[in-house]
Amino acid sequence: MDKQEFADLIFGDNPQKRPKWFSLLEDPIFKPRYNIPLNDQRQDAYHKLKKVTDAKIMSVLDFGSDPTNIFTAHEFMGQVDPSAGTKMTVQFNLFGGSVFALSTERHRWLFPKIDDLSVVGCFCLTELGYGNNAVKMETTFVYDEATKEFIVNTPTTKSQKYWITNSVNHANYALVFGQTIVKGKNEGVNAVLVRIRDDKMDAMPGVRIVDMGIKMGLNGVDNGALFFKDVRVPREYLMNRYSDVSEGGVFKSETQNIPSRFFKVTERLLSGRLCIASLCMGATRACLYIGIKYAMQRLGVGASGLSDTPIYDYQLQQNALLPLLARSVSLNTAHNRIKSIFAHPIGKEHEVLMMCCIDKCLVVWNLNAVAVTCRERSGGQGFLACNRFGEYLNLAHAGMTAEGDNRVLMIKVVKDYMGNVGAKKSGLPKMGMCPKNQLPKVPNLVDLNVLLDLLKFREITLFKSLVATLDQRCKVEKANQFEVLQYEVSDNVQSLAQAYGERQALEFCLDQLHSTKNADTKKVFATIFTLFASDIVLRDLGFYLSHQVVSQDAAKAFINSLPTQVKALSFHTKDVIESLNVPVHAIYTPIVGDYVGYNQEPHFGEVVNAKL
Image 1 (tube, rainbow, N blue to C red):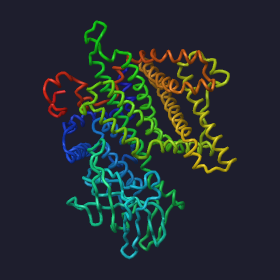
Image 2: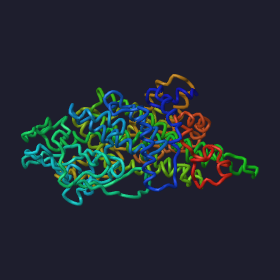
Image 3: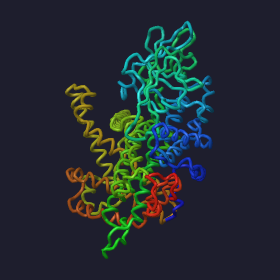
Image 4: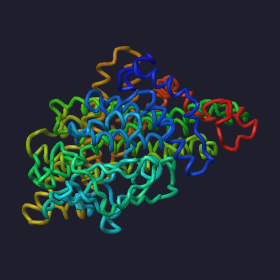
């Protein structure tokens, strides 16, 4: 295959940006350190982020001109340091991106300071007692007409701003969300800029910052809890793109519906989901590179009884790793397409929210599976911190919750899906073959068009079944829709969201397949995408058999085809993993290089002074 074409397609951005990142990551500052105090871990993550910002390789203004550039930065940082990547996503997306999206001319002074870290920000949305129902948060901004200031308070223990990245060590400003009270009336949630530290980095009067301490991972991220007591901020610090308060205390908003104002001011969570997916997609590629590269050089017992066989050659190893490689490349392809649609949503504006949500869910869960499997298939070596699987696993767990709990986002996907279909903004996918008269007669399911039709059939069936249940319970029996969704059909909702995401991913893969130029590269992509789709159909084979859309003979033949598909991919695996845009020189894992040489001297699990 043409490895360059493959790498460019996986990159999903202008390939000319890649050498700049590869060169930047040669700096020794990106060498990881493990057995160091908590505060040193946090400083280490900050210094890596500062090295990136000093290179002027990205800007918060990219959200207006080239948002994909910010996602690309996240993919690289997800590979080399998830803690620094997490600090970056808060600085440039949640804090910086929100300022960019919600600001007017009076806030423009912030942009260059965000880019060079002279202003380090944190994003104060989540409260101890309010996560997915943040619209009901308790933090308040009361407008004082006499002084033309907002008075910020977190009046209860539950209202403390919680899990606030950058807050403990490095932030000097916070974008704080709260109920806006003007002349005694609650005008809903808005955002104000609050200075939380002075020039000496001491907390400002009325601001209390509490260190949340050691976490299960990503301890380079300085998470804290913030309390505000009668903190006064100038009226001009209100983010006033959509709502504003005049000096005389008149509240104006282009959005009259108060709950809708909340979604306006928290829209950065949408791009944030793509940032989290990008961090995790980068980590996925690195994880697969490390796990498979080690398997290709680690020798195990062969037929001779000697240790002369790469463990990669074992069917056990290939059957565990290669379906995940296929799924990862396929989700990467879909992720790239969704990034592009986010940047240029013309004609698909009504689908962007669904796409961003499902992308995060599928990519993050896949990283979890990849990290666990690579760790296990690497044996004891995989348990060493310096071989990085634990770091990537912790990123996956952070990603499952950050910018929206994955399972809650799946509910959001389905609600929007049903709303779009109901409003005729979009329809259900259209199958190429009849599920009653044609599909059951297909003897060989290992065909991309057949597999796509099967994914469409499952999605259509799940959608219609859910709608019928909701109609019966809510329209006929007058049940409360919220209660039905939350207490009766939760599994149906989750299954439908996943079916939608996987069908869409396969369609994006087929689009790329048709545009791939090199014939050999196209064959490799076809092998990968077919295994991806086959693995999904195998997982849900009971569904297809119970709906009689697949014959028993076809199902038996299909099950037997999976090992053959895996073997077909195994001959291309080396080329594939070497085309995943992994900055190998910046990964610093002993098992990717000369792990025997690494163990000739004691390094105590560190790589700083090791020759790798």
